[in-house]
Picture 1 (cartoon, rainbow, N blue to C red):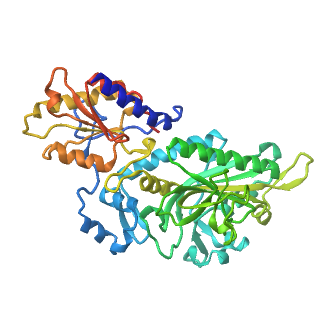
Picture 2 (cartoon, rainbow, N blue to C red; picture 1 turned 90 degrees about the horizontal axis):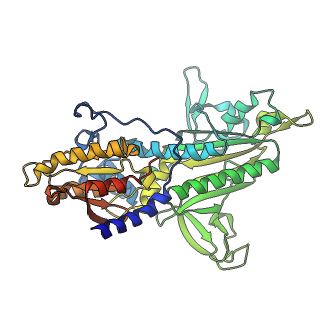
Picture 3 (cartoon, rainbow, N blue to C red; picture 1 turned 135 degrees about the horizontal axis):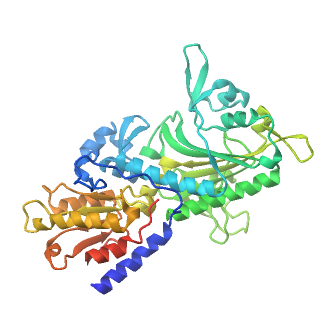
Length: 479
């Protein structure tokens, strides 16, 4: 048993190293349940989770109205697991598991953005039409904008992005000095886009969450340094999540500017076609190259093609927006200069869905370790079974973990549906992708008690005592 435990610990440590989180940022307080035992306010039970359970395939198809809409793995898994429910075409209810995962992702994003000097703000979703007309994007983006009028006839859009709004914000500050720059302002908010064909669940919808950062520098050289700084932060983010990615040269599109890169997760369901050179570091969205080009422009080696899901995009904007709104600062010579800008997006809900698409099997969700809604699921024996006496041991184990591994407070879920067999509950736990599932079966009645511990990353199980479980879980890092 000792050798098996050491092997499991060694393999799980690989995952721990990938997902080390920054400890200085506080985690959210654990939920409290009205049915918990006295003094055990952190005990969470599955029976009270708001989560549609045991959805049949035909029910899932009916939810999306047309069977052809279920065209990717992440969409089907998230629907079947009760993580999302469709509200209208391209819009979804995000249910508790998904919200927990998203909050963890936002915390990791906050850590990386603030580590490079980012300051978090929150701008209105409702954006006046005059701002967009000033940059000509009211006409340029056409039907992509969700537009509306208020009772006074004033036109607005629900912002898909905020270049105009943030530049007007900076322009309103009339006494900015070069000594105050750079500004790296970012937000995590809902965005809106009138997609003609919403599809793939959270991968392409009309309403979604995005992290958008806008930077203001005193010179083109400084702006390019900031651009590299943010791109490096994106690379660290995806590495922490354990996601393989491609940083590809990209077209600037309707955002504009003179330089752009996409961060893509390679996967067959991706809508973007990418070219990569195996001989050097060159990669690009295929749309940026001549259709007849087959060799790498950097080293003339052959290019290989793959598909990807865009999860991040960076732009060097120069003075495209600051010149329109007169976003200026006083330079070292006492003269007014236009701020050099960049903008940087991360699709928050898209990262969640894309990670599930990349990491999961056909029937079971697998999360980046840092983003798993709950780290541990405890499965007590079935009521009335021979092992039922071990049920109390599971509760004691729960409380022991909470007290001995403080970072797991609020991260342990007790599957109290003891009318179901252990096998059925283990199957559900496997589908939802808890990193660790701990089962009290026959060996829980031994002295000392041994619990079956499943590590979902490796698909392995080992029997551990309470002390062995504590040693394993003490290494778990959470966002």
